[in-house]
Length: 308
Ligand code: 4AZ
Image (cartoon, rainbow, N blue to C red; front, side, top):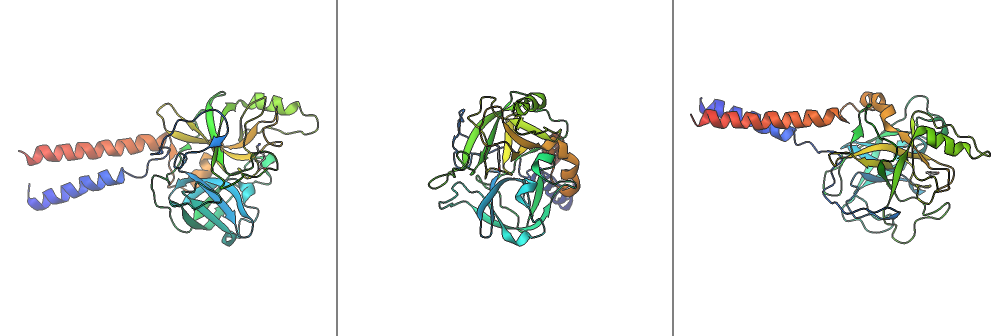
């Protein structure tokens, strides 16, 4: 082999390896034991969580980072989707009212709501928010995986919801406002519908693009201000995948009224059409692994050639 060819071949292999190193989703570098119940999160444990603020109102909603320029949240957090200038998104944030060494601030360039959205109880309560500047990946800023349409989140699966929302109905987070986490198991659509039917004063239909999580007896739940934030579940290979977006509920943590979340597997084509660069977990994983494998075999083959 000519030296020039060797140089090009090595460059090609290295480029392949770097490309396969695109930020892996759903893998925090900071991992802490998590226990059942609402509690302070460890800094960096949920590196995809963002704080969405609006000009004069301060904190309005949560959201999640799904790529370097896209954030996922709830449609009802953006009542004026064309007025992008009033929103500020903070990544890498741990304290709502404290100093956050690792945070970055981003403006919004575009807000995309699925066609047909009207209000949370009618479904389609998800939104894709494009940032005007990309996030920089760090231990405190990492993307969550979005599920491919066939991903199953069975009843009983322990998942976590995170946010800076109220501690109870009408009671805001106190002090420095540390990010909160709570474990909530998935509830099947039929059980969730049954629970809501026990309330004669309020009829709620649990639609197919909704997923419920929480407890029949109540006590642990998301609440006002958590809206738009992620409901995430750890899959068999330890990767975290987002199952839902905090959408609504009747009050917070009341019995027979579990939290209702936008079901992300129902929005695969919306995600693909709006942000094609975001790979859905399932496909994305195999592709990434495949490319890394090709790069490694590429380098191995080169070494053999060069040593002959
Ligand atoms: C809200 O109003 C809200 N218990 C969010 C979540 C829940 C209820 C209300 C779920 O933003």
